[in-house]
Length: 285
Image (tube, rainbow, N blue to C red):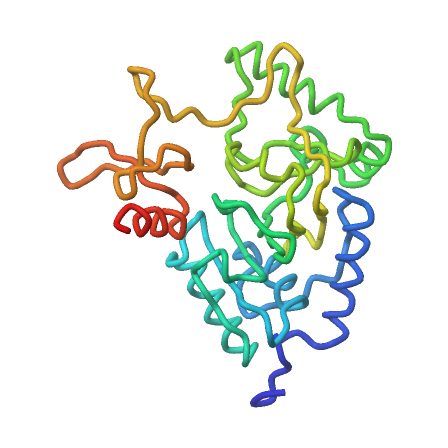
């Protein structure tokens, strides 16, 4: 206890419930476990689901990294980090992935591979991939239980008929362990393959929708696709067929954000700021 505030803000009963939900989510990969999402000192939709997972799991000896769309310095990341630091005395925070034991992220999975002793928590606005084809939650539960994803496949097929490709750019539906299809949060397609056979435990928290689900380590994760129209990630090649590079570190292997510089030129930069900084350090010895 500190200044009348419980360690990690949540009361111990709330933490226990979230931990039990996490254990169930790990035991049934991809299954959306309902839980009693608590009121937090921020609006739902600003990462309260991921924050509650982090607060329930963090301990005094943990080192925390918080990122928002790859950046450690965005408003969302800074505010969440400050709140966790304020309510969790004794923890360390870092911007380096290698130093972190617990990583909370919005919209990105780090470029560098995660380790077995790390946990990645992803903030989720809408946990159910079926919501785009079925508005009724009761019916969606039945469809998930029966692994009936035919209407979702029809949606992908309609995309191919209209646009000659699947147009989903983020929240790409992914089948976990051969059964449940999840919404992997608004990560880009580039990050979806990182869910497959990950060394780390990956947890998803949706505070507004009151759901927790998980992709356990070394679990099968398959993007939904067709044999003749395979899943593909974002293409960063230019008109000459060359892979675009980060203007800061020169990386040809990272996910790139597009910017317009002061001269009006289109430039590209690594989305993952930590990865970009480390690549620059390596380049400069």
